[in-house]
Amino acid sequence: MSAPLYNNDILRLAVSIPHHQRLADPDASAERRSATCGSRVTVDVRLDPEGRVTDLGLEVRACALGQASASLMAAHAIGQDVETLAQARDNLAAYLTGANDSLDFWPGLQVLAPARDYPARHASIRLSFEAIAQAAADAAAVSHA
Image 1 (cartoon, rainbow, N blue to C red):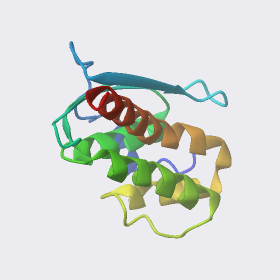
Image 2: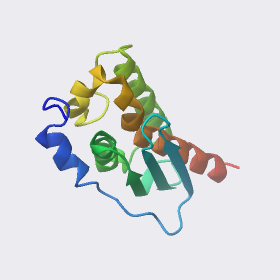
Image 3: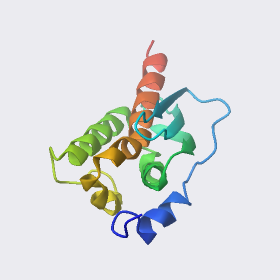
Image 4: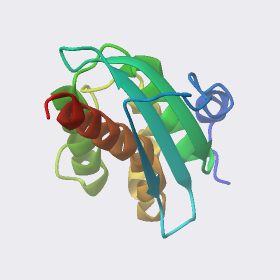
């Protein structure tokens, strides 16, 4: 492990993931896996009638970077709506590929900036954001059906 990539902040986040327990009765769930490294994140959500996350549950089986990303996502997901979560997913992917240079769209993501230079780690970092965006969209679709 190189010092710039796996620093104390990332390791601290990796061991302190909020909402790290599956929900018993979610409105929707989504799982994402990385074929590159085998990391897996499952997200359960409950939404309010306006489509904002009111409760969140996670199961994270990922490397330290994937765990840190899940920790940051979960720390700020409650109260976010479907559109904001989809934008965060897309903005993170764009940042990692170099299409944009800003991490200001989600609190705390600056700690993951060194990982941009390690494309093999990108899939794991994106997992939790992809899973929550999908779970929230699925929950919203069911509630509007």
